[in-house]
Length: 283
Length: 307
Image: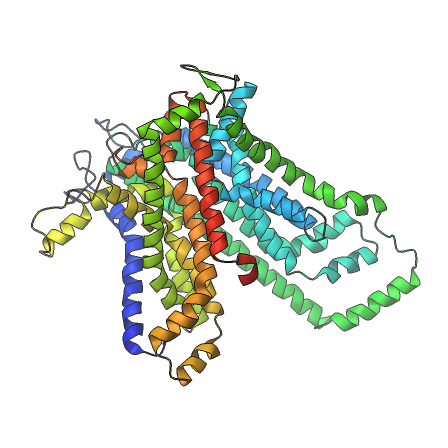
């Protein structure tokens, strides 16, 4: 069936339309972020092109009836939170995946318990944690309860990534080090870690971006101090202005920057692995 | 590979030093549990306990602005005797079914094209990545992006007017059930495309060729070979989409103008007015719905056998 040109053409055309459907809203949003301000609204036509709303984000415009987005502190909180979540969930994911390299009773149960963390809807986890903290009389906060539920969400991703990496890796290298009397900690640092590094990097990428963008869990688990997604959600109920579009463009560029850093580190680790392999070949 | 030479040197080392330190027994016996403990405890304390707490609190007594740990069925009775709450349950299931249907109908052809019609592995990956890239925009921004698209003066209406397809702008596009469905389909359809494309990529091409040589037409090949082999992918995709759509509330809050109330929206509203017990009831109902849906999907296709 894949040799029929008509079918092939039709499906190809459909795929192009489909991808347009995926991108269209964002393209429209990006175009509208260059609307003139402060009188231009969040719709067509563009009165005239300007970067007014980008300046508005950074407080570089004279005060107008449009209030600046309350994102300064929220951005810093979100970055700190994402970083802490990244470190913790990558660590937990690596430890747990390491344990899964041996058979043990109850492994199925632990596996499902961990994977449940990414399956249960955020609104339920958030509600549950809010209930527990109310019951215990603990104040909810972005650095406390929110951090806990973010790790609940990102740890399963890190775990699955590390499980996939450890399953593929050659045990004999590690065993050789042990047999030669290298202490476990040193073996991990010198042998295991370099081998699993690409996996660790992927787990970190997942954890950071998921936490940075996490909204439903945060809604109930955070206290009065907002994270970035909460600050954006706050603008939903009021009239929207193109400044939120400009912010959308910038935060997307930031995500691409993280992706680029990831790609760069990945390429470096691959190149290093290749160099080591060549050196071994020569030796 | 250099394994053999390594092996011999290793062998000689272990022979010359028979007292190679066997790793301590202590870590042997408890090592696995030590490695497991932090992650498992974290999930028990911050996932399992909160979920159980939610079930427990759903039986507490709701006072005006607080809850008391006195067990009662009152919140449950209130939930199922209120047309708002039962209506939200019905809407949730309705929206879930419609969105799932459209993610399948719209996603499958794309997956088919990527998995079966693109031969080159690199091109395959590039097109799949192209589908995933929009995910690098913040979820809430992606939802919000539909507002300038669908409004009365939005891009879609503008385009249709220019093309002369309509004479008056369509105003049911935004702040209706339609906009919620369009938004959710666009956000979640990729989760259907991915798993199906992966399953398609695994199909042994010689099967299709054999069928063609034996005279089967394209439709027959699709119906009897290709489609059945992608069913596990469809099930996995359906589970992803279902879990996310059932737990939704942000898309409906942003795009429905409060006309569409899902169970998620009920939970948010109830928590906002400190009606914890009601929120907990809605949460337990939502969990139950989700359990039923996932169990049904797992029953439709035996994942363990297929993967």
